[in-house]
Length: 137
Picture (cartoon, rainbow, N blue to C red):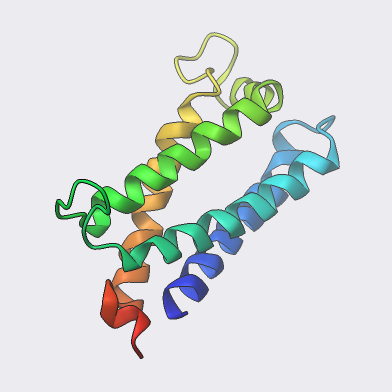
């Protein structure tokens, strides 16, 4: 449970940062996108926290360290987010980096998810434990 609380707390901080930054970047953006991203990152953190009980890949039976697990899950979750909010994320990226910027593609959110997932995974593992001992408290 500690891992999930840590993940949700960090996700809440990230979501609040986005919630208050988006209106400065794209004033005409729908409030629903702001709320959606806020709730997305809280859920994002919770899911990464929950994945901390898997220290081995369940099918391949290979070691599954936190830095691979959290990075992959974070990238995957933001990959899914891009499909749901492609146009809105594109507007945010253009407003942030410019129309001719190299980072104007919404798919850069996948790399962002990998980095944020690694950060959440690090703190969840450091303070919440990992594997079976994180469950058997």
